[in-house]
Length: 191
Image: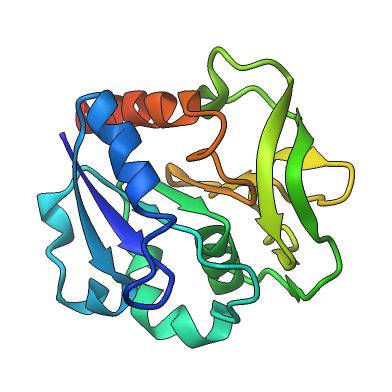
């Protein structure tokens, strides 16, 4: 099994990709890291799924990054978008980008609204690491999976594809989400 980790931060900023790669190593998943601008030259068929990392607070990437992520619309394999990855994917499907409306920082309680394989083994209320000034609204027809007291759209899922996005950072707390994502990858590969 092999995952592509797309660094949505600017080149040379790897603080959000290496923790993800380290978690995947621990659960026996091979991974490659690429910069977002390299996505136009990637053979996605070489990977079982994709993780799109976060980026530093204050990065205004949502509109700027859209040309490099258009492949997401036709990509059918599992995707896990984190923070900036959540924003990029949501905006692509019609989310409104909320600048400094729902900021959160530190450990925040998340309420899981709906049972889903991505949350297997986790309580319905969990502590999550937040580092965001900006957030997004829920795109039309997307499945709303979790919220916090401040941020309505903490976790969402594409209505027809195994594309999950998280406002919070499971690479710092809640590593079980990556194990659940691995199981989703395994199940998808059997289809």
